[in-house]
Length: 305
Image 1 (tube, rainbow, N blue to C red):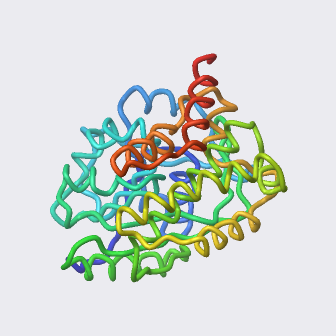
Image 2 (cartoon, rainbow, N blue to C red):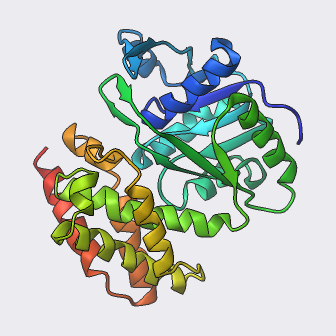
Image 3 (tube, rainbow, N blue to C red):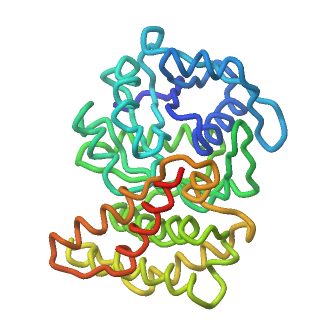
């Protein structure tokens, strides 16, 4: 598979879905990208006006019955919505479709690969953006970058076609020789910053200030390092420090996606973060007290919604 990418479908009208759909639309025109959604969502979205940095935006939205095979599908849903998203996008997956996920976590690629074939799914990590979406309004000052890599042998042509497409669309990316380590590094960051910001109702500046919140942030990340090393992933304290420096480049008043869920009283991705950490810790006989605390605190908060 080395054909040029021309038609993109996005599933998930959250912050990252809208961010990348708007960049593709700006580069290639509104017919180059569409969202996939079930009929109920299509009817609901039809009554809404979406904005990006204050500018109204509209996107074509197709149901599974109307979808045609896409050259590229971007999965941009919450972890809890992944099973239904895979059903919705099935009719848009053809033999030459390439799939990437900009979701958090460490297993969405393998789940999609089991559904549609590992050869179709590349590794992708979204990082460095400060996009926030409340209701129908998306704001951001930093679009960040995508880290890309192959998952299995023989995907080099797919990766080449994707990077040519992103070059044309002026979407920031980099290719990674050790994409699995990068995936775990982003997971480590999210386990720390997403959960700490939600549990303490804090922004980036507050969790980066010396004190309890910062200790919680880094403590949760260090527990991921211990698990990663048991899993054969060479994460180190140096990686932790690099990701903390990345956080310092974001808008101080900004908040990550999990805190946005908390503000909106939506179910969070706690199972994908500390839930996964706790399961893997049990597998390796490790203690993860910081993630245990965050898991229980966030579950208690959600129980009040």
